[in-house]
Length: 396
Image (cartoon, rainbow, N blue to C red; front, side, top):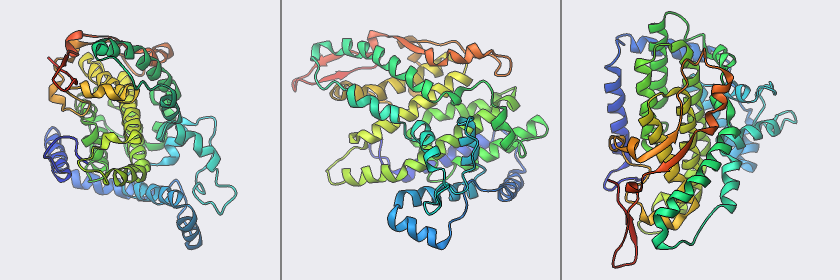
């Protein structure tokens, strides 16, 4: 997958590895290897979310339900390699349904609870709301001279979409994370710096690999959250949220990988294909971006970063809402973070940072879905006709 010219995927992962190497220099982690060994020992001692399949179950699934077989195997692989548990995430977002998932993907077992898992999947992994929204909210036609106006009008549609999506994944910005923190606190207990070091080792182990590093390739803005860990004061109040957030992103990525690979396979039949020609990919990118943005309004205080997250979400929305108008875009939502310094003056967002996560009231968290774009500076969008009757959007 290529998102900028003349750069190969292998180069991206090299960049990610270098990034984490430099990131580690911010900490006194001489015992990194020892912490990692302890982490793996602790992880090994904890029960997996799902039972290991029997030979007969594996054959049945592989033959008749290949995707369920994939979900089973990737869940086991992820939980063995990293301290993440689907069970903990599922129970936290489905607090009214505290079932066990041990037989979840065993279709030979009538008590597999797959029907209970499906709503979680359709909310947090591959949103049915997002999929359904763009069945009816697509504009194929528009007048070239109305380009800036169209971008501005789309703000209303975006805000409506963003608010509804935020409400559909409300546990992402829940005020109370005690239930989730209890599931993972064993390894993150102890003195503040020790807990932070343990968390950093966990995070790097989770993300610094060829598959999960795709999150940083697609969403370099995630570095904002990784960097924030360096300066977090009330770390014990943050780590559960960050653990949940990154665990959810990793599950979301890995569970959707088969479909992403399928979309690439289909596109490869074309010459000079672009992955953004896939509607499914664009839907998934929008879903990821909005999820990241929603989490950002929970833990970030810097307006410029929140503006960046909203801007990227908005451009992803535009690509689906008015597909043809993306020809006007001089820059897309995959550009590098270094280009974001001017966004504070070009994009207005109605956003009030949450102060202390422990002391903030429920009403402050309830306002998160109400965060919205209020205006886009016209300097952001300047359309000009060229001789081919196309337009370009210049970013100043």
